[in-house]
Length: 361
Image (cartoon, rainbow, N blue to C red; front, side, top):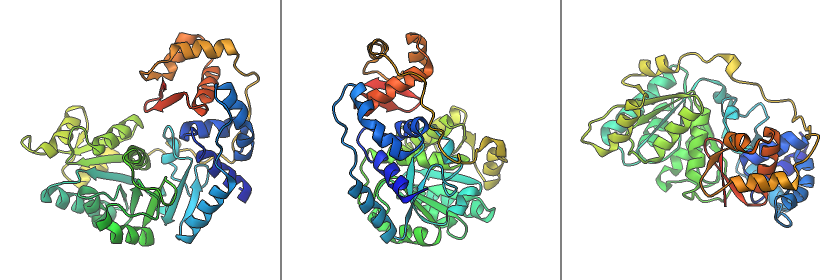
C-alpha cells in the first residue's frame, strides 16, 4: 500500500458521517481510499446534503506523524497485522493504532471483563484465571479499566495480554493505570481506535467494547451490573457468534446480578480455567479468512433512482429497523438498498445501530 493510499484511507474514516460500515462499503465499491474520496461529493449530494467536510490531508499527515512519534503505527483491516477474528465482525474498525507485538493476536484469545468496583474476591479470581490462561498460551484481552480489567492484565503479564482503550493511544485512563498501560504497550500489545489526543468520552466505550469482543474467541464476565458495559461486551460477543461465559456470584450482591442473568440466558458457567478451555474449544481455521489482497472496486451497473430513494426514506423512522426488513418491505434489490442507505449516511440523515439496524435522524 502506498503512503498516499494510507493517507486517503485515514482521511476517509476521519471524515464526518463516514463510519466503519460505510468505510468498508466505500472501499468495496471503489477499490481504494483515493477513489472513494473522489466519489464522496457526488454520493453526499445524492443523499440530500451539500458539500461533504472531507478530512484535510494535513490532518491525516499530522496523525501519522504523531502516532509514529509515540512508537505506534496504524494497521488497516486488510493488512496481515490486523486481528483475523476482529476482521470478521460487523463494522470492524477500518484502522487501529497499535503499540507492541501484534503476533499475539494470532494466538487463541479470551477476553476477561467485569465491574470497575469489583470485590477483592472477583479481582483475585480474575488475576488467577488470566495467569492460568496465559500459562496455556492463551492471549488475555481486556479494557484497562479499574477492577476486573486491571486484575486480568496484571495476571497475564507473564504471558500475553492485549489492552484495548477508548481514548487515543497517547492517553492513559484511568490515570492510576498509566504505568500498567505503558508496560502493556512496551512488552505486550496496546490498541486504540481513536486518534491520538482523543479523550475517553462516554460514546467511545461501546466502540471499545465491540473491539474487545471481536478480538476474542470468547468473553468471560466476572461481576457486572445488569446494565453495565461488561454486559454490552458479552452481548456483542454473542452477536458475533463467540462464546459467552460468566462467573456466578451471590444473588445478594448487585455486582453479580449481570453474570447470573447471563448464565440464566445460556452463558457457560465458569469456575476454573479448564471450564474456559472446554467452552472455547479449537477454532476451525475455515472460520477465519485471510485479508483480501485488495478491495475489488466493482461498482454496481446502475445507481438508485429518485423514486427508489423516496420509497426507502418513507420506510425509515426514528425507531431502528433491520436492513433486511427494509429490503423485504421495499421490494428493491439488497444492493440498491445498501447503496441508498450509504448515501443517506454520508449525508448525515441516518444512524446505524448494532445488529445491522438503521434509523432516520
